[in-house]
Length: 116
Length: 362
Image (tube, helix red, strand yellow):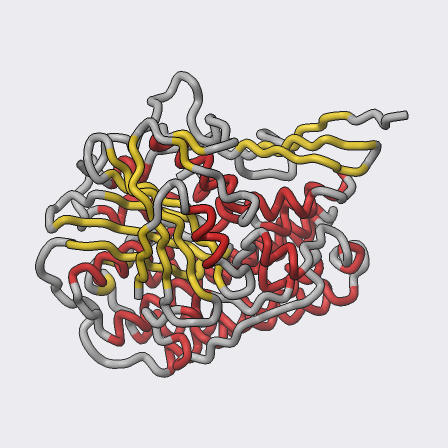
């Protein structure tokens, strides 16, 4: 069962803070899905401990030049997923550096035009 | 007066590492006080390839190439996600054969990890013994699938090869041999100070840290979190074959060794139960249509939770294939464990994580 909750860039940190309890929910990853040329759906995916197939996705739609707020104050383990989004989609995430996967001479933001 | 620190790298090429990852340790004398990591040495762009180069029905064989050790969980997670999108159901026999191979994979992967723990502890002979014993599992995987690794056994709708009576008997015979060997390892790991007992309280991840850093797999269970995707999903009937969650408490290297040893025994039992109770029926069901919609599938790979997210729009090429691998999401937890440890223990701690950089840099 996938439960999707829409949020916005202005409220996503507050929404995750309200939703997330570390002993109830497990943070799976941050995901990006291209919707159209300019828009990407950014998803924060959680599963519930000790329940069957229960997945919750908080998501918001962002433009290529938007800045996604960091959630590492709530979820320290999100650091690495945020770095991956920066490299793969070329979308900026607050306090997150480039270069986790990609070298400077490789193709940059390879997933920014996939699937549309 | 401020204390002097020194930066010491571990990797990307290091005698205790088989795969390219680099941790940069900031040390105050022997103590690690800061850690940075670089995991992108072998990035292959598989997510991109899956949505540009390959049709959805070829991808099970592409994602199997992400990792030689847990190839089967990659192809199974992907095919299960596609089957969900196609609203198809595979036969019970196919599910049993899938579980058989997943658990065989877990056995040999845990044996590989334990052998490296021995090697890092200076027990070369035991490293060779466990690697030699692991061949019993590799042999039966080859008989069952046609290959030692990268077995393209799972396909959308079922599995590609059936099991014969002769192979079933060989599996049972080899599993019985390995089971006796594992009891010997347990004896050794329980009583030998240099091998495992000295690693009590070393490389410790507390329960609170495990929750905070979203630890998964053996790392989380050794710290005391009751989490295992096999008990949190219902794609495969694990409750019918004797699955039992293995949970520790101490969260150190020694505890992680024992989680893996106990999981090997449980996996052997499950494989024997699968052979004894294998249902009749077809091994493959033909599924119609093209993937449409979103699907998320989680599976318990040997190193922890593997997740596949798929999005399709009824076409042969999918819109998005997102692969979240166990080691990747554990990197922040690894870094937390290193802080406060001695640099001399870093290789042993790293081996106890059982990192897979092939998966991480998919």
